[in-house]
Length: 134
Image 1 (cartoon, rainbow, N blue to C red):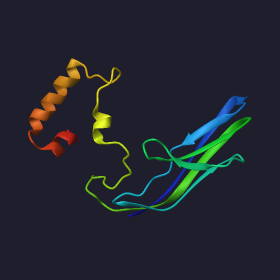
Image 2 (image 1 turned 180 degrees about the horizontal axis):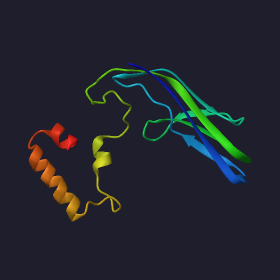
Image 3 (image 1 turned 135 degrees about the vertical axis):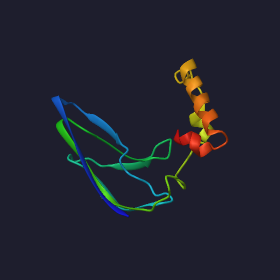
Image 4 (image 1 turned 90 degrees about the vertical axis):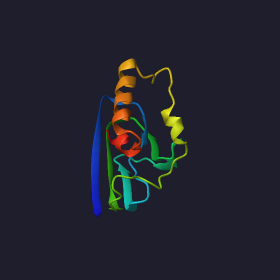
Protein backbone atom coordinates (compact mmCIF):
# COMPACT_ATOMS: atom_id res chain seq x y z
CA UNK A 1 0.00 0.00 0.00
CA UNK A 2 1.29 3.47 -0.83
CA UNK A 3 0.65 6.17 1.77
CA UNK A 4 0.82 9.88 1.03
CA UNK A 5 1.49 11.76 4.26
CA UNK A 6 1.22 15.49 4.87
CA UNK A 7 1.41 17.18 8.25
CA UNK A 8 1.90 20.75 9.46
CA UNK A 9 2.37 22.16 12.95
CA UNK A 10 2.43 25.88 13.71
CA UNK A 11 3.98 27.27 16.88
CA UNK A 12 3.15 30.81 18.01
CA UNK A 13 5.28 32.65 20.54
CA UNK A 14 3.84 35.54 22.54
CA UNK A 15 5.98 37.41 23.33
CA UNK A 16 8.22 36.54 20.38
CA UNK A 17 10.98 34.06 21.15
CA UNK A 18 14.48 35.47 21.12
CA UNK A 19 15.63 32.17 19.66
CA UNK A 20 14.57 28.55 19.23
CA UNK A 21 16.45 25.30 18.84
CA UNK A 22 14.38 22.47 17.38
CA UNK A 23 15.19 18.78 17.09
CA UNK A 24 12.58 17.29 14.75
CA UNK A 25 11.89 13.56 14.87
CA UNK A 26 9.44 13.50 12.00
CA UNK A 27 11.26 11.38 9.42
CA UNK A 28 10.41 7.69 9.03
CA UNK A 29 13.11 5.15 8.26
CA UNK A 30 13.14 2.08 6.05
CA UNK A 31 12.55 -1.35 7.60
CA UNK A 32 11.08 -4.67 6.54
CA UNK A 33 7.59 -3.83 5.28
CA UNK A 34 8.21 -0.07 4.95
CA UNK A 35 10.09 1.81 2.24
CA UNK A 36 10.38 5.59 2.24
CA UNK A 37 9.89 6.60 -1.40
CA UNK A 38 10.28 10.32 -0.74
CA UNK A 39 10.21 12.56 2.32
CA UNK A 40 10.45 16.32 2.82
CA UNK A 41 10.84 18.43 5.96
CA UNK A 42 10.37 22.18 5.60
CA UNK A 43 10.27 25.07 8.06
CA UNK A 44 8.79 28.53 7.54
CA UNK A 45 11.99 30.33 8.53
CA UNK A 46 15.27 30.71 6.69
CA UNK A 47 17.26 28.06 8.54
CA UNK A 48 19.52 25.18 7.56
CA UNK A 49 18.15 21.76 8.55
CA UNK A 50 20.98 19.46 9.61
CA UNK A 51 20.01 15.79 9.26
CA UNK A 52 21.52 13.46 11.88
CA UNK A 53 20.74 10.32 13.82
CA UNK A 54 20.12 10.55 17.54
CA UNK A 55 21.55 8.17 20.14
CA UNK A 56 18.73 5.69 19.44
CA UNK A 57 19.21 5.68 15.66
CA UNK A 58 16.22 7.90 14.83
CA UNK A 59 16.55 10.32 11.92
CA UNK A 60 16.43 13.90 13.20
CA UNK A 61 16.59 17.36 11.68
CA UNK A 62 18.11 20.09 13.84
CA UNK A 63 17.95 23.85 13.36
CA UNK A 64 18.07 27.08 15.31
CA UNK A 65 16.55 30.44 14.50
CA UNK A 66 15.41 33.64 16.11
CA UNK A 67 13.93 35.96 16.97
CA UNK A 68 10.50 34.84 15.76
CA UNK A 69 6.83 35.00 16.69
CA UNK A 70 5.63 32.05 14.58
CA UNK A 71 7.13 28.86 13.18
CA UNK A 72 5.49 26.29 10.91
CA UNK A 73 6.99 22.83 10.39
CA UNK A 74 5.68 20.89 7.39
CA UNK A 75 6.45 17.29 6.50
CA UNK A 76 5.24 15.31 3.51
CA UNK A 77 6.12 12.21 1.61
CA UNK A 78 5.31 8.84 0.14
CA UNK A 79 5.73 5.57 2.02
CA UNK A 80 5.30 2.07 0.56
CA UNK A 81 4.13 -0.46 3.13
CA UNK A 82 3.51 -4.19 3.20
CA UNK A 83 1.44 -6.19 5.68
CA UNK A 84 3.79 -7.85 8.15
CA UNK A 85 1.02 -9.04 10.51
CA UNK A 86 2.03 -6.51 13.13
CA UNK A 87 5.69 -7.52 13.28
CA UNK A 88 8.32 -4.82 12.86
CA UNK A 89 11.71 -6.16 11.75
CA UNK A 90 14.80 -4.72 10.17
CA UNK A 91 14.80 -1.45 12.10
CA UNK A 92 17.88 0.45 13.14
CA UNK A 93 18.38 -0.67 16.75
CA UNK A 94 21.51 0.56 18.48
CA UNK A 95 20.72 -0.97 21.88
CA UNK A 96 19.71 -4.51 22.87
CA UNK A 97 16.12 -5.02 24.15
CA UNK A 98 17.39 -5.46 27.72
CA UNK A 99 18.45 -1.81 27.71
CA UNK A 100 14.79 -0.78 27.61
CA UNK A 101 13.58 -3.47 30.03
CA UNK A 102 15.84 -2.65 32.95
CA UNK A 103 14.49 -1.13 36.14
CA UNK A 104 15.63 2.28 37.32
CA UNK A 105 14.61 4.28 40.42
CA UNK A 106 12.08 6.13 38.24
CA UNK A 107 10.65 3.01 36.55
CA UNK A 108 10.19 0.58 39.41
CA UNK A 109 6.96 -1.41 39.18
CA UNK A 110 4.70 -1.22 42.21
CA UNK A 111 3.05 -4.31 43.72
CA UNK A 112 -0.13 -3.84 41.67
CA UNK A 113 1.77 -3.70 38.40
CA UNK A 114 3.79 -6.80 39.30
CA UNK A 115 0.59 -8.70 40.21
CA UNK A 116 -1.18 -7.65 36.99
CA UNK A 117 1.81 -8.69 34.88
CA UNK A 118 2.02 -12.07 36.62
CA UNK A 119 -1.69 -12.65 36.02
CA UNK A 120 -1.34 -11.86 32.31
CA UNK A 121 1.78 -14.03 32.04
CA UNK A 122 -0.02 -16.96 33.72
CA UNK A 123 -2.97 -16.64 31.31
CA UNK A 124 -0.68 -16.60 28.27
CA UNK A 125 1.41 -19.54 29.44
CA UNK A 126 4.39 -20.16 27.18
CA UNK A 127 2.92 -18.11 24.32
CA UNK A 128 5.09 -14.98 24.40
CA UNK A 129 3.21 -13.32 21.54
CA UNK A 130 -0.13 -13.75 23.32
CA UNK A 131 1.41 -12.25 26.48
CA UNK A 132 2.71 -9.26 24.54
CA UNK A 133 -0.73 -8.69 23.02
CA UNK A 134 -2.51 -8.87 26.39
